[in-house]
Length: 144
Image (cartoon, rainbow, N blue to C red; front, side, top):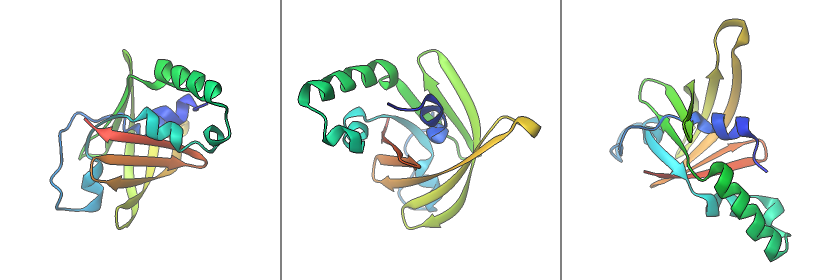
């Protein structure tokens, strides 16, 4: 259902060891910190879920919990994103390329040199909720 790469890049939110950032300040500072998956909100954002029978929704939620339930992301002030899933950790660099209110366009870079892969996604911050979108994939996170 969710591409592992999206989940990992997903803002590689994968790097949130910092605690709450003050509400005032630059919009890009609002993503700094640790974030955990909000599976219910993420599943509700999936358009495929709306037309599923209830038993299929329940099974999909169980699979998502097994795969994504312990995933967390951390964004640091210096542009590092760390995604954690169980005992695995993946690091990336991020750069905010555009800001419109509480919506940020972020460029994520995984790897270096010729092997570097860049992807663009949008982040919308609403209090302690962070919504990351890339294409038709949406992840909803909550501040830890």
